[in-house]
Image (cartoon, rainbow, N blue to C red; front, side):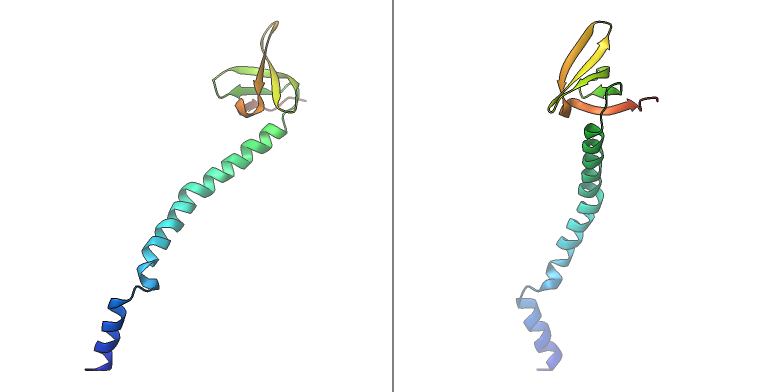
Length: 102
């Protein structure tokens, strides 16, 4: 037998690194297309929630539009109409509609 045929016979019987390359490529593509952008959005949302101030206009996950009336450690009081205030969790804030005008 030649050296080439011995090498081919040895590599076919043993799983090598080349068998894992497609799996590694799929994971890499999955990470860069799905996981990394999601983590970036979560960090941006978290920093927006931490930077909330009285007077900011926000939208909740339930679709309520309101203005921040008071802020607590875990909750936010929203003014949704005249004499109507709702207490919601900070995690319920989906986005800031507009920045507070100075």
